[in-house]
Length: 157
Length: 465
Image 1 (cartoon, helix red, strand yellow):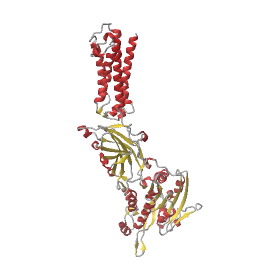
Image 2 (cartoon, rainbow over the protein chains, first blue to last red):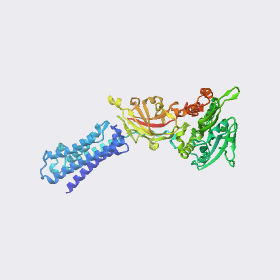
Image 3 (cartoon, rainbow over the protein chains, first blue to last red):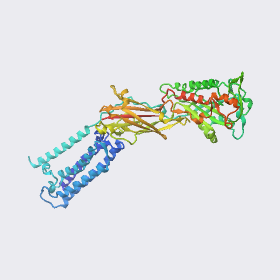
Image 4 (cartoon, each protein chain N blue to C red):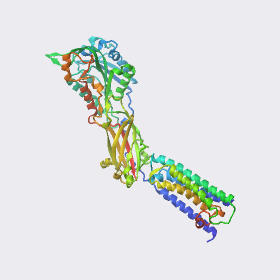
């Protein structure tokens, strides 16, 4: 039980760190989107960043749900097993696909930029899929800790 | 290394990595914008305020030619108006107003308050000459001066009157503004009212040593000239409108004042059209107090095709022109651009070369809005610098013109001989005023020539990144 709590706290802390990126990108007094010359295709910079923030929150929320869903499945739904690489990887990939879909939705439905549009696009993918990947690599339950690709190289505990 | 140790190390590595990324991102920030010599506010940003208390001097032309206006009848628009002028002055909206009647002809004489002004008495109009010039000696420029006259004048008299109005009001009052205080905006209003006229029309020159005249039975305009501070003149005209609704079809009005707007816009809408730059709200120094006259633009350097298309700004600002009765030719609106760059002492300094960085492509007056189309030439800006631009929109000297409907009431000097020969105006007894056009054109020229009164000022704070 203690381990579960630590892992969940780990996910939340990691999420908070990613969440802080949204603040740095769009909310602070000198937002990074502005400093990196992300120029909106229409409307003002403030309006653009407000929209960006909304979509970034959506992507991050979807990503958190995917991470927690994967964790819950791995912890309580799947059978306890000896950690084996690729075990239940298809399910892990399905949740990854959900986060990627959310990122695509943000890119196409969210605010458009006319200059340096790759920066918010990268953020959506790194914030969504990146968080999911890092959180599942770091904090997946022991039985499935090697399911995320590359986890065997990154996870030592 | 045991397992626990490796685990701790792994977590520590991750934490350090994330903290490093965070610090790197947070350290990227703009330099603090320049923080000095913010553009001062123009006095015209404040609404016109009528005086608290006012002295109103009513001058009534007592020359013999005015008798014709006593014709009476249903078309009489002289006696009902003139008899109520004092009432209008006392209930004009000023907290206190002191009204004096004056009679003018060869001389100006005050009519004591205890005496009734015999407007209806033909004997009142007994003067043979009209020295309108005398009026200016009797009236203070800060007072509201109201002159009732037929304005039927020789060319020499017209020149004298218009030059006096220019010296004393249109140019003179402007000079009374001192540094630090808002200059007084003077105004001269000419309100013409067409009314019934039966009598002799003079000022038609001499023939054989005798002054020529004709008998006229029809209509002829008389005029109420109002001089003084713009807000008070406007207030007085407004009261006349309120009191005499049915006069409107029979009146012509022009107001000459250097100030063309009720108020200069204090905020600007940056418009929606943009490519390749960003409208921002946080570029200016905090000391600017979020000045809403300023469009803040972040302009990144671009290359290739994007650089060519990324340049159009269409700001929109309120522009409530004063109803002067003058026609404004919108094609005669111009803009002047002044550019400033950061100077050595931390403040902005004018840079004449920068005026070309912001090209005014069009100016449109759409209802009460002034719409500009500007092209920003980003290749003239240096990355990493803040710039400030002032765009001042003004009418050219000839932008305001006296409307044809007013000029149609004018009788030119070269028509006088025909008038005398014909012994009357045509058609249908509609009388006209001698040299009215010259008088009004003189006032127009005095008001606008050599001046560039702003109808809109917009600032741009540009951060080239």
